[in-house]
Image 1 (cartoon, rainbow, N blue to C red):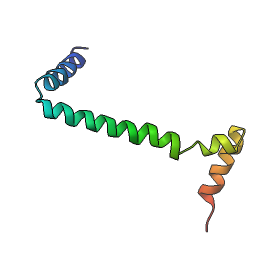
Image 2: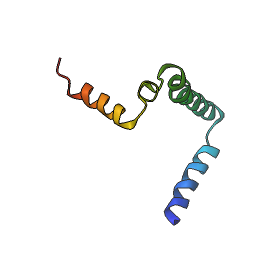
Image 3: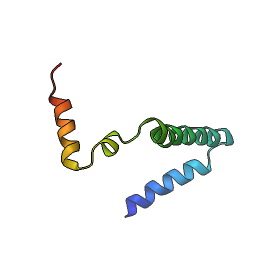
Image 4: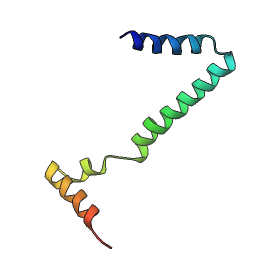
Length: 71
């Protein structure tokens, strides 16, 4: 628990002593990560297996067939 507190203090002190431009860069990075992992997943990567197959067995059979299919 003591090490966790040290790590947390390390990051809070680092961010609090960071210049204004550094905080803005981190804000841009966090916004880009949000867009990449949340927005793009919702709109461009639908859950194909969940929408096209009703049971877990059907999903697993489809994945197995596609992984072992030799073309």
